[in-house]
Image (cartoon, rainbow, N blue to C red; front, side, top):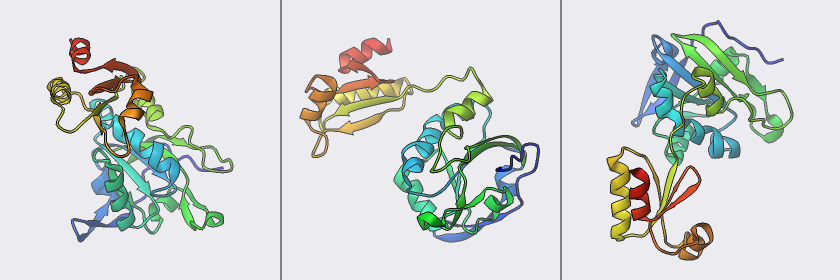
Length: 242
């Protein structure tokens, strides 16, 4: 059975990291002392579940974690620092701190270093998350020991619900736009005025008006979606925001 270290201190480790093209030694004291930190650890950078769900989930909910007393969110993996740096850029995960446990020392100290040689990975981290307060582990969510790569309990939503069951998740907003569209600019300005973050999908070679018609039932832009609900164009968005 994989060990649960609730109530214990995190392992004392120094991580050699590449920051701004220089080698920097970062200690666990620097990361955890006097802070409330969420850590989620995963099998590998650029791998499917880690890239499509684990990292995006924590990055999206980071502002809500901060509102609920979390000082930092750390993504950890047994990868080298160059790989982790490139993965952070690829994920556009500016709300997270990526820590490369290149030698697996931290993960081994947690008792969660596992053998994935059958995949050509060698020793890697089992998938888990934990809440750490001033260097002491307050809560751990460890994925079940089953075949494959389970992802059931270490997600951002589970951790946030543990910290505050009444925490409200942010609104997830996407809008389809075209370059030079004045109505699109109007919609984006309205969202910014309300302090609402959004993802812009610009119509072009990969996303066409045909795709827009299939999704929104319209070919004009902008087309705005909030939490899966189709709001409509700029005027409908202004009415919604009021």
